[in-house]
Length: 359
Image (cartoon, rainbow, N blue to C red; front, top):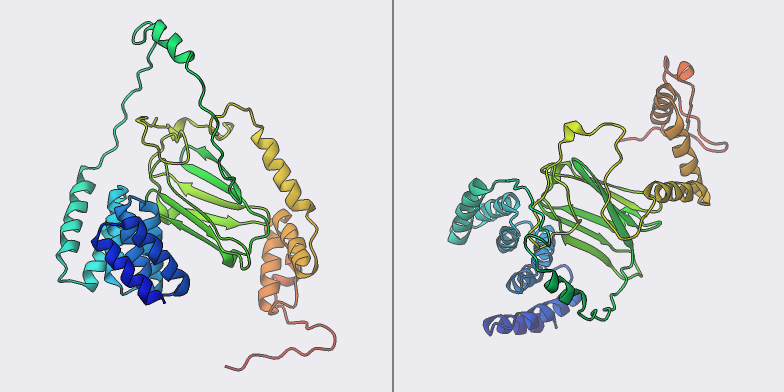
């Protein structure tokens, strides 16, 4: 029973056995996947284990299931605070405080957020490159080169491949997942978190959740589901160069990018790699694959109309929109001179009758 597992998880919390508590709550969630309290409690366990992005995901799920659950906002605020997402943390805590005004934990954490937001600043410090002559002993370098290489570690290959490239003000993440229904995809943006989940019935769930290298503007981020991929566009909070997609604890000072100095002829910058990859060729191959893909029925028809619309001029697009809307989806014209000056009447298929909907 889920209630028994929940009770055992609470006992594990008391004894500081947080990994056991998270495991027990996961089992309970499998039995009762729509109980918000289970996700909120597991978020607390993940916070204790410093699994902060997982804690945010659990808190978001709890809020989705029960928007009036105050402790879910407390968990989200606490995790985001530790992730240095102070604005997101404050917004969650303020909502929680409105639901539970007598809980002083919200008041204290909001004050902490205000303090950290005020102190937060971005400072660019020039990077000093070390040379062997200045800082390193050549003998030490030789000794390091002589060290035996570590054996390779086997890494589980993710279900879907992902890549990214960047512009001065934007990062574009591509997940190569083919023919995934839009309703099976959930994408969430935080100040410094990207969370993507794909849940297709009958298949193992795919979750890509990471703390990003730099902060983004969630309200200006967007994504598009295409036939062969999911394309996610992240707007940078600052025009700095990301040396990787994911946050790293290594002390690397980000370089500011002067967006005004970038001309239209410049190509986007790509992550460094030992292997040289022709990204323009890869993009062309993906587009060719989308164009050559064989579809049937409505999917093939929709693809045909999309291609007409994409390659059309402005008047043709206006004609297609107007004729389709005014005829209730029964007429699709590309001639603006013909449909621009009059209302397009519906034209039902042979053997059918067009009727107005009675409210």
